[in-house]
Amino acid sequence: MAFDTLGLKEWIVKQVSTVGYRTPTPVQVNCIPPILQGKDCIGCAKTGSGKTAAFALPILQKLAEDPHGLFALVLTPTRELAYQIADQFRVFSRPMNYKDCVIVGGVDMMKQSLELAKQPHIVIATPGRLAGHLQTAHSISLKKIKFLVLDEADRLLDASFAEDLRVIFDSMTKERQTLFFSATLSDSLNRLQQLAVNKPFCWQAPLDSVTVELLDQKYVLVPAKVKDCYLINILQTLHDEEEKTLILFTNSCRNCHVLTLLLKTLGFSCTCLHSLLSQGERLASLAKFRSKKTRMLVCTDVASRGLDIPSVHVVINTNVPASPKDYVHRVGRTARAGRDGVAITLVTQYDIQRLHNIESHIKTRLEEYHVSEHKALKHINLITITRREVELKLSQSNFGENRKLHFTKRKLLEAKKLKKQPKKKEQ
Ligand code: AMP
Image (cartoon, rainbow, N blue to C red; front, side):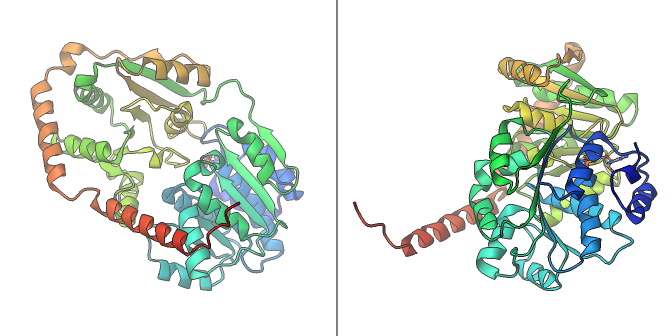
């Protein structure tokens, strides 16, 4: 199968081949033709299987036929993913006259309003900031959009986005095509079918396993108290074997920050990504990792969805995620687009049930990764003391204070809004 058999025009097929895509992936083969035919679409395929091009290519082709006003809105759950999708649109659209705008939090709203005033064809946004523009700045109208895309759609349906999505959906007319994509959609299919305006075409990759075959999935049993020692031993081994590019997932911003400082103090070169960093710091950190200035990224689940960094060899879960879906997205940061990769999950005595839940969800048994206890505990004193010092330093800094202020401000605004609303009559 070739790209030109999917109904794509010659110019876009040529552009795709300059990017290095030779043959379309299954999600592209199956979703591009119905999207070009005007159908709503629900596409569910494994992480790293080419979902972005599956919606970007038909949207750009349709845009080239009728390049007027705001044509498409792409919603994603994280800021980094929004920038990444925008980059892909820019690459595919090179031969045409094209303008887009990324609307995410952590960036000056006034500047964004000015960008929106330049009338982009495509807006790629996170729901919170877009809802802010619709409600307060009135700098964008969604009335005439032809395409709405929800990337990582199941995550966007989480309760945390519900209010923002309501604002966005209320601002749109129903004359549009709606496209939903994710690797983990099965639980959300019913809700998505309701959100689509027309009866959607639904394509799901064959469910032999949820994760890709080229991913080697391992677990390490570690006593909770000495987890750091085991982790550092694993990092040292991977570093000694050959220099690998690694992503380490942690379960909170604080743990992410502490682990980064701990690793740096112990001599590892790494950078971190979590939502308590400023947007500038987040982008700088990711750029450093993408450009291989540092080969280790310590992050929270803010990086678990969609980020496409092909050179990542290893994903390490320093905790077992409570939701098997989060596991699937985390490990999907490696073994992308036909490459192989390794995922190692640290499992303590308290996590066995979670591990079983993940194994039954992905229909795969994880193999044990052996770590010598003797070697792991060799530097226990140094590691324990360093962690204590790092934690002390962090508690003396104002880590997380901005978030607390932001939260209080939001609560006050919400309370003010509630006060303004007319009271319902008592029955
Ligand atoms: P995505 O699932 O959209 O994040 O894509 C994952 C990776 O696959 C990205 O690095 C894409 O550039 C790459 N990719 C997407 N489609 C193709 C294709 N048809 N051939 C080769 N690589 C592709």
